[in-house]
Image (cartoon, rainbow over all chains, first blue to last red; front, side):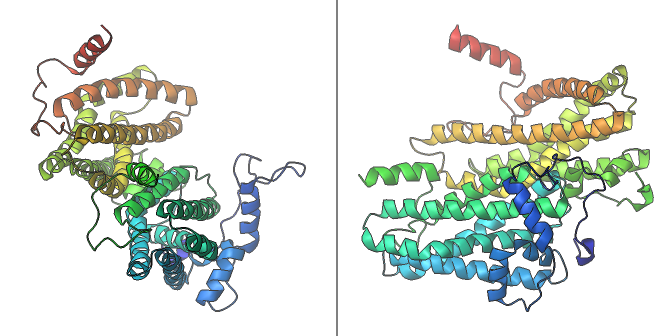
Length: 264
Length: 238
């Protein structure tokens, strides 16, 4: 989509059937759902960023006013925002990777951040075509470059949340020697971060298109599966350095069972 | 529907086919638009299903990937060709008022939407196929079965989603939800019947890891899909 494709914020239909879609206004006595709260936030903040788009400003806006980021990545400053969001994602994941690598120390301190960044970006690249097509299936009008921008924003959101977990992760890593348990903790933190990041993606797309983007939930499952498999491909992310070669091919569930068996 | 046909693009990209927006639906109302749509759908079908065929075939070998990449689009196109005539007749018998061109375009469009989804999923499918371990070793047959089941499920889900899109299109074209549902059920029955038999003959899916990769099913003309299912059922429960 070119920059003129969304010159103004999308407008609500003149007489929307109430309650049929996430952004519809509900009667005042109805308890607001999560979708309605997101929708209200998006409506309020869907405007350009009023300061220079530095990385720090973008981080602040992404957490406090995600609709503002949604506006910028679909308008004129899309390229700048996408680049800086990507930088934010890479820095956040790199920092979390350092904490992961610090558990084992040695060469892992440098290899784990590199592997995590590669895995994160490669996994996202694999899932990009399906995000584009699934968005179109749900009635979304985003072009491939729009899909890239929204995906990068989601990655930055996820990376920031994981960065927030980094101190907790570090504390745990200092008190245990068991790689399996550290792996479980990392998975829990990733699970929480990705859950909110996917919600951000879903609500952003729903707001931009004024459509119920339920299909994106299926894409979310696909994204998580790819990321988990990527962790297995690039293993060991937690544990001793085991050379530069990739380990033998294995499905991530089989790997979990094997690792859990070894830890007994 | 205020979009004139002159504004419609020469070819519709895969995302536009999946979106089924006003521009695409208005193209269905004229023969020229139908032709453009049919060409776009056919191209999407060939590219998308070919990519997915290669993505799951790569688990077995390069040869299987090549065969599957050729046979997947061939299978879908053959289903359209074989069921097109009867689907046109059924549409007319049911009183939908759809022209022959519209019926063929709609069926092609459904296959194209499924193929677009499959094509979009092919990078993930290829990655997971390559990472689940090879066909050698003790777990080779188990991995083959899991992969076959997973790919069948993915193709099935994409097919269901494509048929739901077709239902939306039929509601638009016929103006009646009930009629659209009846027509869709009739089409699914005929296309399903043809699809089962053609997939039995062409066998685009993975060959078992313990046999050579065949170009076509060696038993293709020695029985049919339903006979095979019947014998399998009798063998299991009989």
